Length: 302
Length: 302
Image (tube, rainbow over all chains, first blue to last red; front, side, top):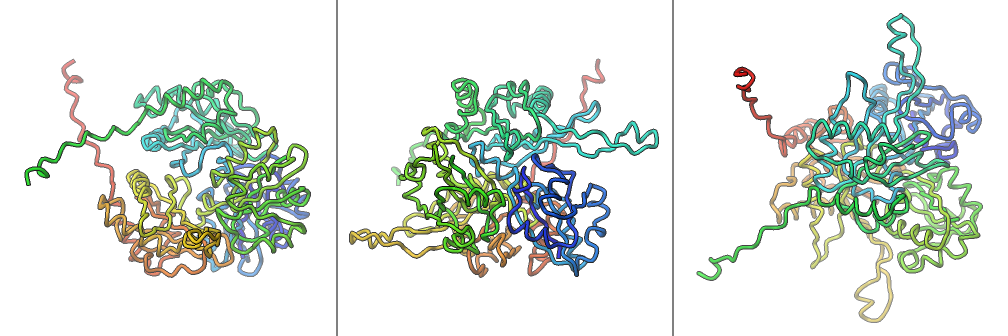
């Protein structure tokens, strides 16, 4: 049996009781270690907490070596641990499809992920549109496909969750060219970098998906002991020091309910200014007023 | 301190290890018991598992009696348990705002909820638009505000999560008129009822947000031992026996990736027919092809 087990966001103890029971009895336990990280735990603290060995599974192992992970899983119980919830990344869907092909049963043990825990910032989850990924720009690669998606969400008044890039165990191109496999130190996108990139793309595209004054919320270290929210405009967040990773950003949509705003104001340095930014932003993408109803002359002429 | 603790979806053991530690040491423990239910546990099984008393908090207590819940929480640790994740319902935001006013610190312990665990059906979470609630129709109240939201999602190709109504501890109107407070037995909307209501509203509105042939996925008892997915058209699901609660439905959007479809087909009775329904549905709301690029004559005349 293959068990996909979500680890939640931060602590060793964010695993569920059911998840922990399964981990303890499995023959092999893999930790997926490249799409996200636990903020208050690592491989060795997990091993100590579980009282057993944990095998790190990097991208190569999961994407090319899944048969190694699944070896003998028809007979043995194998656990595959994922930070957040189980189905956050497509690679895990791939693993389950492969397990099916090999006739291996599987079960998931769900947990919190940024996709639902972001509700802690006070914005209602059912007012979110599609989530988008913001990747690190390079000199030659500055992709802006997120822009249309943000525009689509904002046109219908919805909030957008921006998931910020992380680079873990990326081979150094420079070293590769010298024929050596050396990994770059991990990099985690900050709130400021994300917002700078957004401003650059708005500057370039100029279609008004958002402005420097669009209200946002920086979500830092969600679910960790140092969790922090900051409600500010996009421009302000492009200069914000968000501290240690991980971060996400929410860009607000027009549909902000009073209760949502009340809750958010607690996280604003200047409550009045933020409230004004929210009110001003509600003018964008406003649906046109209904046309005046013409008197139906037929009704009288009949 | 007020602790809001998510319980996850089904088992007593779906609570996180950290959540359980907090529950064990709190002075009072409330269980919010009207926005959802745990599928494989109840108050008494939770009490047994926690080794302590749990107080049921119904709508009246949470919405009007929050000061009772928060009594002395400046000094004592109080736990408020929520099925799924902590911020699924606005009433919990209210409770936190009230705690803030009273100078009570609070912390959340997140968990899985349908909003992220629905990824288990194989559809990618970042391709979902806004979620909508489908409430039980009555003779005189057949609200269709969900229709515009589904239309908005489908216009931009996104999937829609439909959250189905549950009625727990609803006073009987008939008995109230006789001056007696008697509660109706709990009711949980089935997949068939949801889909019938959707078809009725499409019939009435006729704006083509979806058709009887639109591909959907019925999500039943998500995260429980009897979890079941069924991939079928809206019309087919309007005749589907989904069994014991709880249920949700996902209506697909145009943007279905090959990997998503591969995964879904496992849940279809007739794989070919479902695949054809997905392909046919992709014709709806297709963006128009880009206009032919006129030759820029200026480039030549300069």
